[in-house]
Amino acid sequence: MILSMVKIQSLYAVIARLSKREKLVLYGAAFFVSLTVLDRLVVSAVIGKMRHLDAQIKEKTDAARENLKLLARKERIIAETKKYASFLNNEQSREELVTSVLKEVEDLANKSQVYLIDIKPAGFKDSGSIREYTISLNCEAQMGQLVEFMYSIEKSSLLLSIDKYQLSPKAKESSLARCSMSVSKITLR
Image 1 (cartoon, rainbow, N blue to C red):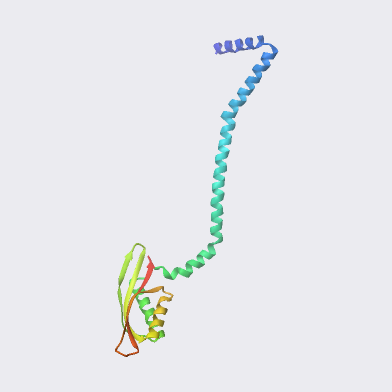
Image 2 (image 1 turned 90 degrees about the vertical axis):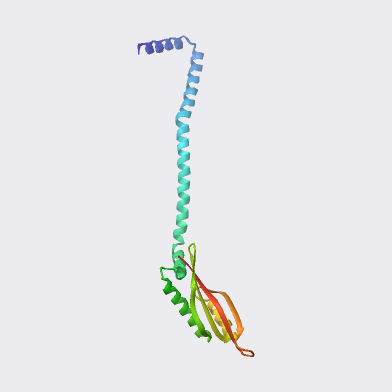
């Protein structure tokens, strides 16, 4: 401690011997060095922290805007979900689903005046989150009635589709046609 006091006194002695102009240059240099040190240690750190906080604020603001957009669309999303909920496999058992598909096909056949010879489930096929239910059927009707029946299957509210079909006349020179077809329904699990 005594040594540091001696050094400070010797520094004061050196400064006291300087001319007025030299003192002015020394004080100016000390001032600019102090400003530079202050800038590097304090101001740069504060500005860096402010930039980081500004970036975080911008990120949170953008996320809030996206969330507000979703909230604005919430009612429409809920309405769309309800609209398409029947296409999801809402925990119906296989038997219930097959029964509903068979009933729908029978109702469509009755409306189109198509005689169903036989109708039976053909199986289930799972691939990932998709489950495909297939039924096979044989039927007879006039050609126009068969076309109407096939069209009504394709536009059914259960999203049924005809995978394959085969048409043939019932007998030579008969106006009736026989049809064998495979109908499927796809649901998400």
